[in-house]
Amino acid sequence: MPNPANTINDIIHGRIRLGVMAYLSTASPASFPELLKKTGTSNGNLSTHLTKLEMADFVRQEKGYKGKRPQTLIYLTKEGREAWIEYLDALRDMLNI
Image (cartoon, rainbow, N blue to C red):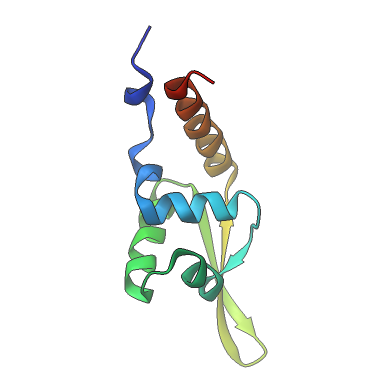
């Protein structure tokens, strides 16, 4: 039987990315400012982490406008939801729950 720690998804496991995935698992889509508030990080740092999640096809960013103001919405993708569930399963395995 493989070590459950070896099945932890390193893309999700980073603190900011973990927070983003956890939040989006219940509140997709979320606006960029909403994620800033929930993660307590800076614009640049959040943007970097969202890019990493987007490159893994875990999230999708949609840029548009709300009235005359630019707005970015972040969606959890089907692949992202599957990866999130696998991540939680790996944690449960590690904890023998």
